[in-house]
Length: 452
Image 1 (tube, rainbow, N blue to C red):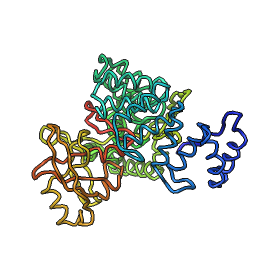
Image 2: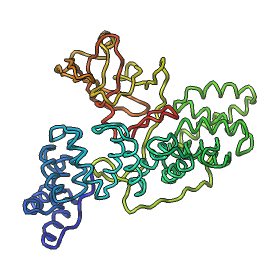
Image 3: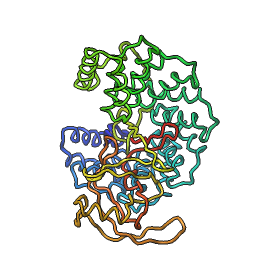
Image 4: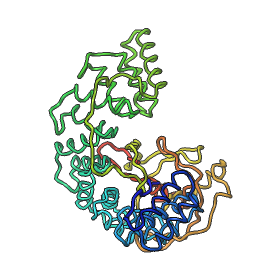
């Protein structure tokens, strides 16, 4: 949850500050008792703090409807964080009836006041066509506003849009500019992309030493693609002296991080190495992993620019700022479609098509039957029937069920709603899973699913 508002106008200063002091010492009952009269008199700060308490169940029974009422009170008085939070609640149907149009309305009101998180969310909505007609130009507008205020993920995605020519004229130099801003804030995906730009000479003059620098920064954050790319630079002696031990180490680490080609490349490299060199490389990889990438080498002396901003990068519902945590999940080509592997209930991996238009995760009846036979799904997991409206306007009743866990990459989402699709249908990764992330997008250039 967000840090509470700590100051208020002079009219209510005494009781409000006493409430803050009570809250900070864990006396939530006193804090609520002091703030509620102020909130009833129209003190926006007290209204917002009470909303946070009900939203998070802090000192009170969690009550989304009560939280929404207090957020609305503060939002109607122009308080942007409350407007944003109300947008989140309408988007997810928490405490209010789900309403995409109302959600977008509140996001837009907050965004027009310069609330960075709302600007970023609007960019995401327009980019993915969630609750609005897909419009890359409008998406780029909102990402730019958020990016100008220092939002690393907005900078990352805007850079991708310039690289792809989505909503803006394709411009690799501009892509590098935005990716560099995100990379300088520690965003591993952006660091990887800057490394790729220098490696290929796209938007910048080709420079293997710079490629090595940026790949190393991402690799030391555990990025498998960067580790794999770094291995090739050391193997070929690009940007550094040829070093098979370092190359082997990074291919080894890339394999551990999930790169499926790294092991094969490492095996080929071993034909050129002595047993002593292989053992040395394995030991260096072990030290790196045991240190949680704190003692891996490859980025000594590398400095990134410190970016400051008048607005910190916000998180969901105005919670305390966190470092960028976007994860890239490689997509696999299946026929003419790209799919993402998902581990269901820690038992079986299925390949899903990402479909933002699907309300829930959708699994065909024949696959559901198999999951039941193997015990992956149990009868107790099944819920009520639900009616889905298809793209052609027709309605389809379907049985719903609860998926206990879904793992994509290293992220596990629990208690996801799924529905039974017709026989021989397609496995769809819908909004019941995707909406559990702060943001998601597909990088069509790199063929990865980006999740935050």
